[in-house]
Image: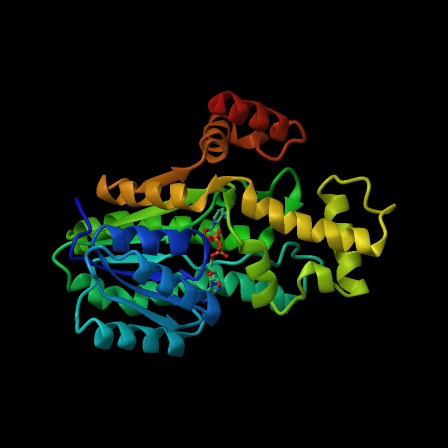
Length: 321
Ligand SMILES: NC(=O)c1ccc[n+]([C@@H]2O[C@H](COP(=O)([O-])OP(=O)(O)OC[C@H]3O[C@@H](n4cnc5c(N)ncnc54)[C@H](O)[C@@H]3O)[C@@H](O)[C@H]2O)c1
């Protein structure tokens, strides 16, 4: 797909972050977009931003939809068909995702499965539901959002991230398996898997909301203690001495760091859209992911060794300098 002008794109989880940036950039490039999100206020904000900067006056539509619920996904497809008067789409971007279900031992089963069902089943259900519309296009592209966690199944240095990592490995495997399936059975379609490293978004606060947790300023004593345990595992040795109020403030700081540090979402979106134009099947985003990929490939057996993270940080810093 050399350009997006006049094409129709469907994007899940476009209420904030990378999905919102993708929607805005596609609109600016003359692409009609149909977006969904499970948080209605954020969805409406993205629609407003797309309308505010719409040089080619393309059609922008939005649906409230939980990608892990097949009935809602089918309704989303019907909305797209009706709002865009179409039986085809050109671009399907499975972007919706949340963090959660860190420990298979300690995290509540409901949270583990909710995370897995959004990050994996959401990709599966949306692809299956929209495939007929993608098949009807003269040229179509599927983009699946995986993660650096599909290269090394740990968050940061040493924090277990089991539900999310399991799902993101599944997304990567599914996307790679589709390469040959498309090549032989649907040669007008292409697929890309995206593996971002740290990108500055609201994923932490959105995930708390979607999982039914409080935001840090309102954490209960139980949630404060969970954060203490989580950060101790992550290697912070100061949390036992901190008051509950300080833990809540540190939780707010963590959300703020996630949003303000890392690669800007607009830069990640730009890399993804260039990857689609160049028909790159494997899109790595950020120096952290590039160096992680190289190190894990060079020596997979050492990926979970205690000294791995030091080597990874050095390699990322060298790449950035
Ligand atoms: N930010 C990062 O550092 C990072 C790193 C690797 C991978 N990713 C992946 O990138 C994608 C986008 O994440 P982001 O960082 O922009 O976060 P984000 O929270 O800003 O965007 C994700 C969006 O998905 C929506 N969403 C969540 N569950 C949903 C559901 N069940 N149905 C519909 N929408 C739902 C959220 O409301 C949110 O708007 C995710 O798949 C994430 O796992 C992000």
